Length: 261
Image 1 (cartoon, helix red, strand yellow):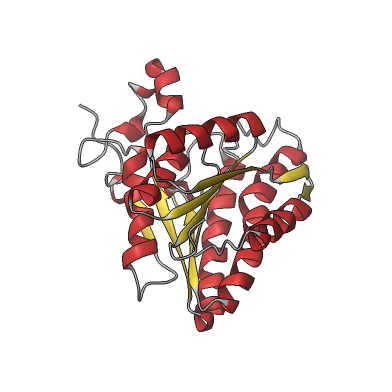
Image 2 (spheres, rainbow, N blue to C red):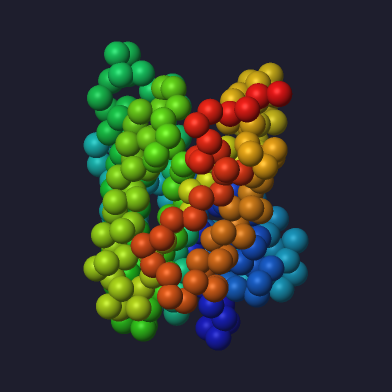
């Protein structure tokens, strides 16, 4: 990769919002390293990025977050950053997009390990990535860490207990990292999407036509590019901003209840 270009590392970037974030950085002339859980999907995504952006410098890695529900795969994170070191690739901006959605989480039915899996993926694994990235950023004069969080950190929705807990904890971690890493010129911020038109929207049209959170004050729901624009703001323009939250949910968080027409 051209070392004169800045480089972003985007996790969970084979589908949906992660793709939009990668494409935003590529369109702005950055190098991009991205991750996904499945090696075949990572290879396919890398080919698609290269076809769409002829001059793109993009590199994909297959990496999973956990060895099991109780154990974060710290070794894989360490090996990822050591590989980047060996290639002379410095990560200017880390975008933590990958997440366990924790769907259908019922406190009276799901085993404790389901809760642990979500917390370990969304909080502990992300902390591990931050640790390894920030060590390099410190030595290179600074950088950015951007969490893709959720407005459910503040407003609960049914059967997502672990996800909501993880996103609330993630915001606390973001603020703590912003405070501790600021002296190294490392900025840490979070984007808080609401509902996003992902492949789940397309696969479940009957559900999404009536779901209350689609009724936003501005009358529309975010697409991946909206989230990517918010990430780009933190990465490229927010020089004096750290420990901040940018909500991208059409105004859902500010309304007491949706106005359904």
